Length: 86
Image (cartoon, rainbow, N blue to C red; front, side):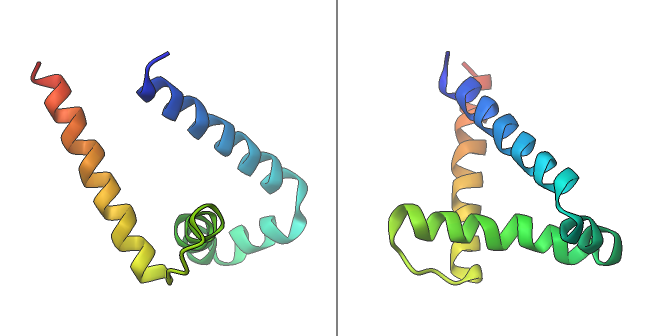
């Protein structure tokens, strides 16, 4: 299994866990129904920042982590484009 397949597999596992949480937690469902923007902000910004802090011990705020995440997006997009040109 190549690295891209591993990333995709990990993404599906995380999505599956999130779907399970959404289906089981009424407070999450309420948040989604009342304020989808806040829910997306939590999932897209708060959670990845918290995971990063836990794994690295680096105390980054949301904006600082967003900068790191954007660098990663660019890095992997560039690699993907390079692989397509081979």
